[in-house]
Image 1 (tube, rainbow, N blue to C red):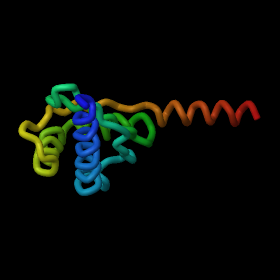
Image 2: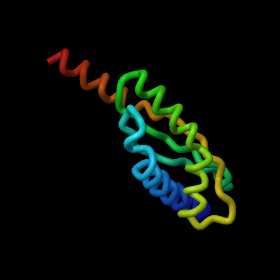
Image 3: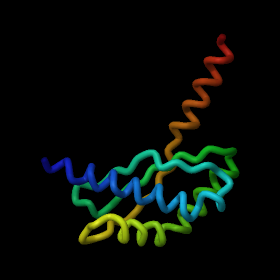
Amino acid sequence: MAGMRPNKVADAIKVAVADYMVRNLANTTPGFITTSKVEMASDIKTAKIFFSIYGNENAVKSTMRIIIGHRKKIRYHIGQNVPLKYVPEVLFVLDDTLAATDKINKLLRDIV
């Protein structure tokens, strides 16, 4: 049972962050952003937010800078939308699964 609460909080934070992205960053970033997952520390004091950013390397770097610049606003949005006693610190992690998938698909196309 101890592992269920962090998972539920992670799901709620993922929804809140995705909502913030749609409302505030969708038209201001050069890359296409998706919130792929959120991992919570067991004490619910830290949230690792994983993003996939679709675009070229410059778009990815620029978009990541914009996201990091919005860290306080994203944390505030989480506090307003997820009922917690303490709002967790947020850490942003670039999820490169999308890039790895594209690379594998390209290699498979080259073989066939």
